[in-house]
Length: 353
Length: 65
Image 1 (cartoon, chains in turn brown, cyan):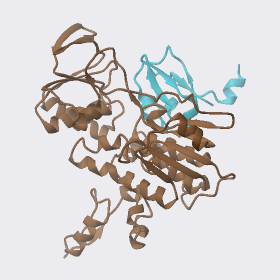
Image 2 (image 1 turned 90 degrees about the vertical axis):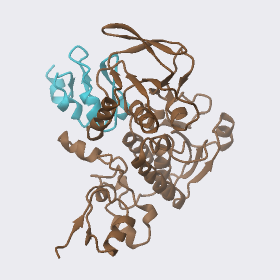
Image 3 (image 1 turned 120 degrees about the vertical axis):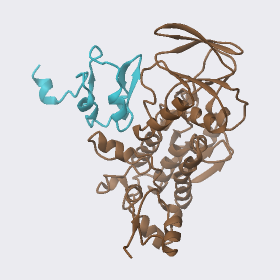
Image 4 (image 1 turned 45 degrees about the vertical axis):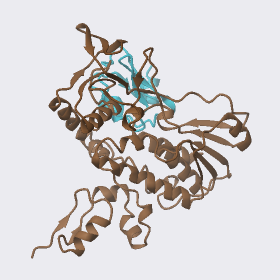
């Protein structure tokens, strides 16, 4: 017959190898997986599959091309810079002076920074206060069924960190006393953002919703229409019947969401008859209602559960640093943005620290 | 060559924020602001702005007064 080659989300070897062995396809075709890791075939051949930097189909690469701008990859900052030795595509050069570095936070930013710093010869301790690595990716991975693949780059970063000698300490919340005890040359805060405070009681956070820690009523108000808010909405609609009102003070829904995916979320909102309001803020939250204020005036809506999905940067670490000690902030701790910003902040700091 | 922002021209559309590779630009009260430490001086923000609210102060322009 005619030889068949196929791509389409075959990002790791197991599925295509099984399909080839069963004669369903003849070739495993790869575009995006080779953008996130051109070494993929070599790593499979050498039995280093756990080191493959996996494509997560975020389509940042595509959307950069639609802006007529140089391509970028969320999970591989060295894309396009393979010829620049500082980016370490062919291996990092050792840093001039070995430093003791403490990284706070085992999410994507913390792991990526620790990995690069350790590969450059630094002595790195990474503290994660929870029992699992991944930070907010742990939440994102539960938004819908396919999202579980978002944990793959976390596994790869964990493998690279372990192979590079990063001392990962789980279940440990970093403190001033530990800072004094460890006495690092540099402290890197990668602990994520903080959910924005409000003057109202009983406002839940995305973590409380997605972890199932708190019950959610039928009528839901979500404050914030960025990726986090839309993620909470999609999660809720996947797990029950809800009447959702989602609001923001800005104008454009999903400003930080890739247009490739945004239309799907908006379509799901419309199908479930969600109310999406721009230029609107909440002025009061009572037990089963909320007062909203928008450009056409004030309205009161019935609300069982209100959720804040906007984030602010981390609290500044002021207690620790003495002379000669540097403190850096990366990822959402610096300013809440997207996964590609966390990974890129982290990689680029690791390159120069 | 950190971008110069003309606040009066800025429409708050946020296109520049979307294209900024390191995420250095952010809307604050519907006007764009920049986190200079993150800026990689790539100029994509200025290229994207339909309102000429962001310009790159290249040295040759500076010297023309």
